[in-house]
Image (cartoon, rainbow, N blue to C red; front, side, top):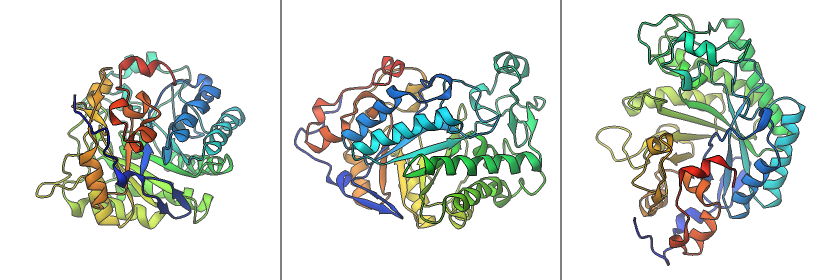
Length: 384
């Protein structure tokens, strides 16, 4: 195990930051992590307490686990929270109130799974046995990238389907704002619906939503535009994106900084305030010839603030160990905080490190890194 200094305080993590109307006390972000512990899609008191503990201990910005928008095909799992309907919205309002009572800031992650990447590789018959009765998957082209040559699965989205889905995102953005959230994050990573449009492997369309980079981005751009119009000019909108997809860790949306710029700049024009670049390992360069990571390059090519994420605060452990249900030792944060101080990116998101220890920020600020609790797989069973 690495031995972080008891005395060294990573000062760069504790500098304030203002993005639009959002002022944060520090640069520490709680990454969105699906917990599947909201019965019936309604976040209960234990969810509120879970997020409030992180706020109490000094997390600068909490981004919720993905919350399904108000669309019939957005999410098949009943234990994943929704952000629509009176009960779920009342639950989220209680979450926001609890976080704000502790002095924290919280953004809601809005998501639509599309052709759910957790089902990739199963085949239509097996997927049909898993889906709830009457549930129909929808996606840009119905292509399961784990089954080359397989017949289309689910409904290929028509223009009417696209318009309805965009409207559902906008309504959930309004609902998040009314519930008191400090901003929203749009889940456009890991093979979820917006990302399915962005990735040419899952987007085989030959209409205005497929083909070129700009055409593949059009659906996501329309989502951002609709959300921006719905919530007004000052309400923060974050876009989370990734190169990798569930089960496809070598996938690429962009092979050069120029290609990344072509992908992201339309989102800036549409109203995105900040980018959250999801990687498995924050220290890996995004492109050959530069040590800058994906968050750093998103900041370079867009001029917008960026959040880095990927095995921060963990010892020799990346995202795959999480999927395998393994634990992870406590790791040093010198590398990530040095790059933060140099301005490569603006915020640092932690996932499993904050599941393991809600007091991570307060311990780190007090120079008590050796007191941090390491992550173990059994922590995923509860909302401590």
